[in-house]
Length: 101
Image (cartoon, rainbow, N blue to C red):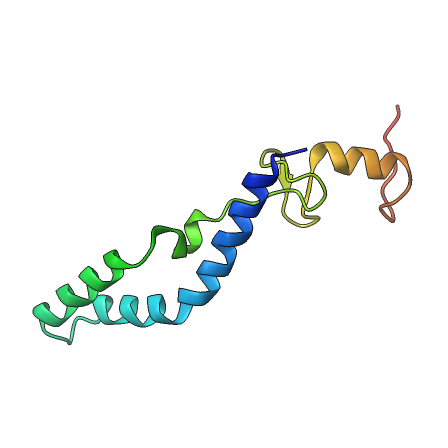
């Protein structure tokens, strides 16, 4: 089980990303538009740099929904490998059986 503070920090980051998504997208659009003057694009870059770091979507780290484990994460199931195996052993995941040969 991951530390509660780390799980809460990730939730806080996700909320901040949603809050600043529109503003960030509009500023990025201005910075990449080659038709605008250089000064206007530079000001947009400065405003983008002035936004909180945690408002960037790349700061979010995937974590297991059940345990909060950050490593060995399966995106499709939103689970870590440990919980995936445990749930599969108990028959909680439809269509998944433990392999044997």
